[in-house]
Image 1 (cartoon, rainbow, N blue to C red):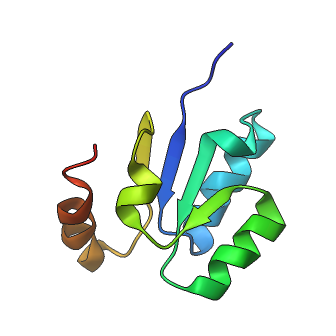
Image 2: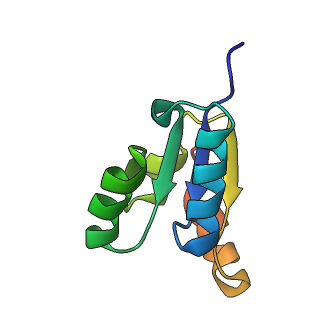
Image 3: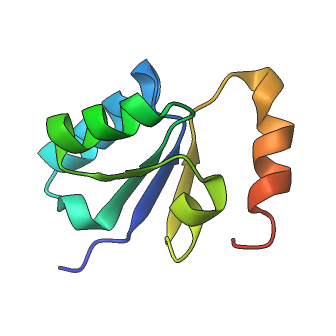
Length: 87
């Protein structure tokens, strides 16, 4: 069965839990992308999960079937504004 591709925007505790849960449920790392604000976290996530990680919201969301937003409520409007053109 083909699974949808997923972007998790926000790779803090909640975002990493989402990604880990998807991996445990059978998703392959190539079908998941994580977006974080810190460059060092990009490398951490790649090492710990094997999932593609980026600092660009647009890059992370582009071409994904599902986009999960895992950021603080105050940051949601800015995230939505930035990804509007790619989702």
